[in-house]
Image (tube, rainbow, N blue to C red):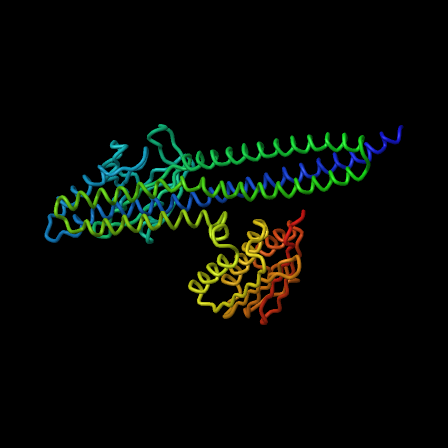
Length: 451
């Protein structure tokens, strides 16, 4: 074996091994990220659907409130008017409202009219659950959400359904509505497929780049010396760092995509505005209440968009930088919890690397979450300063603390997440806590992160 061949093998084999390790780690991390994003979207979507159901039910209650509250009206006529109104209210493809009396007799069902007048108290779904009985029990105890199976009009088959019910105390009626679970599952699967396709595309590009660099390294080693091989290894490290940056950019794109899921809130606001318009045309002063409800729904939509976007990538980091983003987070924490806070930032350069900023922000955010949930602190101090070529974060509270040596005392997986975030960028993380004497978290990150 010639000397040149040995040089090529010495340079090429470690490079190929490093490429395989980076690809394997990247695939594992990308899958975890994909699943985490899908779970986050699913949880956010379910929460949004629950809020949507509550708003729809409030809309229905607002529509029938003038009839319920009208003094001196004949009860039979009032009940007939309420049934008429609810029979004409619908939303989406399969959205409708149903009403049952306290004995389980169906009074309103715009889709399955054959059920009206029947006693369904002992009706069971395909899993053996007493559907109407369970709905009535829930409504009598203040109302809420419940899952059951029911015939889906557009599919003509029984599907999983998320229902929300409340009582109309005046007549002992149960008013409710629901959303079908397969619609939620379809949206989640669409997002999961899109994330998977983006990850696969990114890895195909990375593998193509790695393959090209491997060939370049071989040519350079044949033409020059071992020094060029070391240079190629440094390039591979840069590629790995670019991969992490790609993941951060993918989260930003995913945050923007989530905005489309807010359409149903807009529909609810539209219904309220149309109701207010109808009431105003009839001279009904209740249109002001309907407009207030529409405004509140719009505020909720804006708040939901901001919350989802903020969970993935705080906009203040991009717009105003780390210091103002931390000040905003600490001010919201103070207003929400009543805990006194102190924040001191000493950064000589105005803008840090994007992955360093988001890591410091998430560490502080997770720490404040743990303090609010577990520490019962009265005072929190955060210091962020630049020391040489590193950024230091130091956060202290005067809460009840815990014993880090006892796994059961650790508040969830938040500390593990913080440590992994810091160490992923080549940083150092430490925690010190004493029961009754508070907790201190310290993180140190290089200005130029390395994997």
